[in-house]
Image (cartoon, rainbow, N blue to C red; front, side):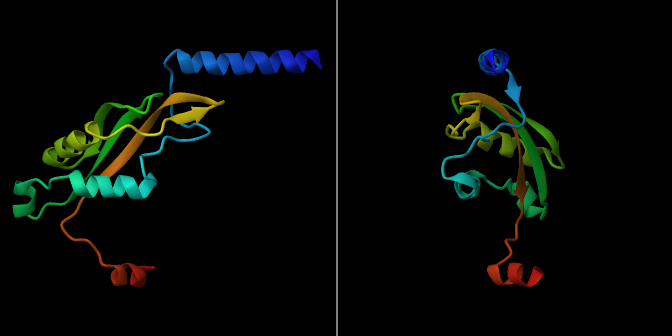
Length: 137
């Protein structure tokens, strides 16, 4: 029984030490959450993204995949483009993500930790209506 308790203490100590050492996790017990959840995130993006005028004029659409870290304090840091088909979209997505409010940080073993997150930001000039979405299912 003593061995089990010692192992558990060593395991928990190592997890806390990893979290304090600044390790960035990719998967945790509780992932970071934007204020208001997924709905809040979608609303934030819709409200804050400014469609680049040149892309609007030329009817250009696309997706920018942005990678960033939600720190153990909920701050968004280190945003970078993983993939994107349009530099104007990439820069606009970075601008909006870097301006995000604090998230609820991720949790691992009862401790807040930094978590890497990838967010696809879609630039689309047309928004399918609810009826169209129902028929596609």
